[in-house]
Image 1 (cartoon, rainbow, N blue to C red):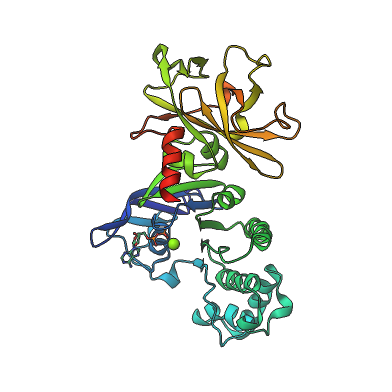
Image 2: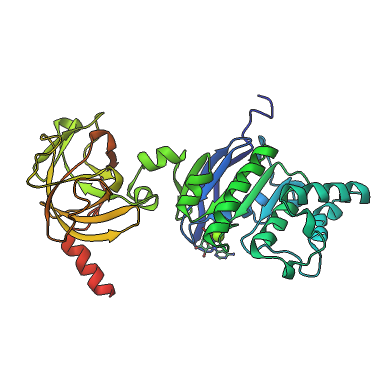
Length: 378
Ligand code: ADP
Ligand code: MG
């Protein structure tokens, strides 16, 4: 294998313990050259620790980290050819934008004229050429983050690590920076590992997403697969809204029964399993009109309605007491007649169903349990 075919990064059985807390636990992962990889997980799941182990600011308790097939355990951070961008920018306040960007080159002993040239190119890459003489305090949050990005890229690293880099920016600016980051990554062909707790950000940007919880990777896949075929309850709930429903398998997993309605599955599932249904895949019909697919429809009662602008999110109680979310869009049969207490029929295509291994305790609280939980927290 040439170095180009080897993964840019390999984590091999990596564990990092702090006392008896495993921040990262026996984690193995390959990231390809040029890939945009998002690490997605809630706070405390071990994302930053994993980046620090790769950047060389921390050392694994067990296992090893490889870059292009070579162990980096003996390489100090500045020899790993990795650029890092943090959420809080970490710019030097007493240095101008240009001096901040020049800093890594100075540290590496790059001469004056080459330094000036590279700084110019990096500032141009992030569209801030005209602000080279400004101090961080004179720049907006978005501009400071661009300078931090220029500083991370100026020495031509193989890998760019970003730890929640857009978390401090407002929505509009964040969307704009997402586009720009993708452009820059495309232009440079660099490998990016991008940490976020924002699933929509990971979906929008990444070639692949790794979902982290408790120091472990629960699933690694492209955004479409993660969304359409989550591997367990946690992933299903973490990525987009969904209902997880308890069903009875029939014919050894060829299909299932829920609240008296039966549906065949596109492929055989291993029992016991639960199913995941996304709200945009649920169709509602009034109980009196004849259903589109008379073979599969579940009687349900509307419990709550939330206006979303583009449509409505409807909470339903199925006839067996389970809770289901559905989207109703303008122009749908029930768009003008959504009221709590209304009886409807819920349907979805068998191809819209993802199957998950059953988990205890109960996957989806019944409507009563849900109400009870809400009352307790109110
Ligand atoms: P994330 O970036 O996903 O929020 P971290 O990697 O920062 O998660 O932390 C993962 C776990 O490791 C947390 O439980 C955290 O408290 C713990 N941890 C991280 N760094 C240290 C440290 N230096 N000392 C002790 N515990 C730590
Ligand atoms: Mg973190």
